[in-house]
Image (cartoon, rainbow over all chains, first blue to last red; front, side, top):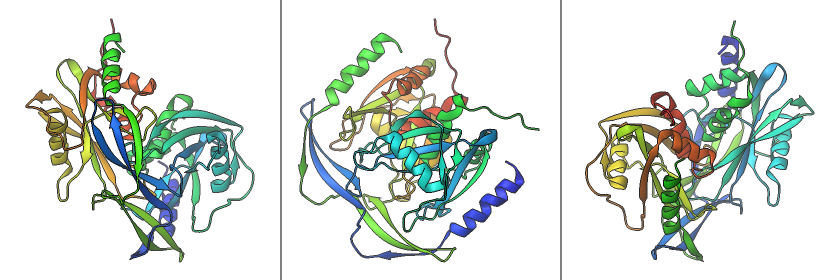
Length: 200
Length: 200
């Protein structure tokens, strides 16, 4: 990892870290849960509880944007419940009702970093929390991305982004900076499509 | 993947699949959620909601058990909210309060499949749902596992297990059988420790 890139990253982390946190005793407006009684083929009955996010299943898309020189764009955002209180990862977001996942990927890319891709390759999906959720996340590789405008962030969203080489992004996993399963799986699955530069 | 192994897997899936499911309108006893107001270093205030599982953060351990001939043990269990309604993956479970993660890994291995390891190697951790949870899952490679007793399952737990070669487990990811991030990341991270057999 280049020293100047790590410094850039540290500045963004510093800016977005949580300095204070307090619990509010009010009902959640986003997270809900439901109880199901399930009958198995073996004759047994089990009860299971399911997480609902904003009235939806909570399925998300995760996008690895590739720009010129085979660089990728990573984002930095508040992740208030993690140790660092800041997450380093990839553009991602929940799929809207009836929205195709490809459409969600393009939309999130444009909203979160203001980039558009020329090609979008599916890297498959995975369940994020199979025991308690039906959320199925889909990974995409967005090739030949170009700057198309500004970020369009929702209220309460504070997302910064920076670029680095793909192998530096993999390094950030090993260094403990990239810690979320969404970014880890997507970066890993992109391996077969990505060139690794010759380090000088 | 050997044909007889795939047949064995299909039998277990058939046995554990959900044939009927009904929603109960009662409060959840396991899933809870909390609201936090967070002050960022950039001067902004954001609200975030956090998933709580059984009064805890929901951090889990995932274990890849290796037995003789470099075979691994996979488990099959009801995952009622997934498409197949059955999950194929690795022994795993929530870390108890004040329990060290190594201890949780040995305990879950013994409870879920009745095996004990001779060596336990940490494969690092990851956040499962960084935006809504502080759950940090830790992956382990359990080497030289031996049968030490029977399963000790909790009420309502129905876990079957079977063994296959490590490369067959990786194949099951590509074939869409292994779909949960826990097993995917753990199997992937074990690569540098595992021999791949010479296929005949």
